[in-house]
Image (cartoon, rainbow, N blue to C red; front, side, top):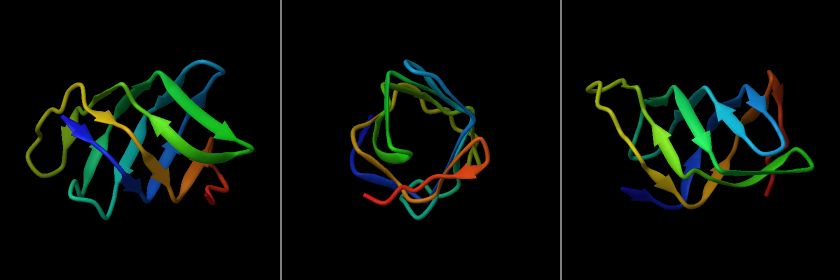
Length: 97
């Protein structure tokens, strides 16, 4: 399943290292996947450019809970993601593109 040009209105990044980003809570709002809550995301590439999130490419997303039907979504790929309201350890990030 491939999703392109999805806009996320809210994302919380709990832990970021140089080569690995773990997103523990990621809520997709105002998309076709309303109320989809991603509990665990492992990314191969995440670019933080002066605290601005421009593009985040996920190679694998495991969704443990979907509010609507408790479905599990495995191995989804998002090619282009725009983060409108991101927080790094609770601190809002400037995500202006």
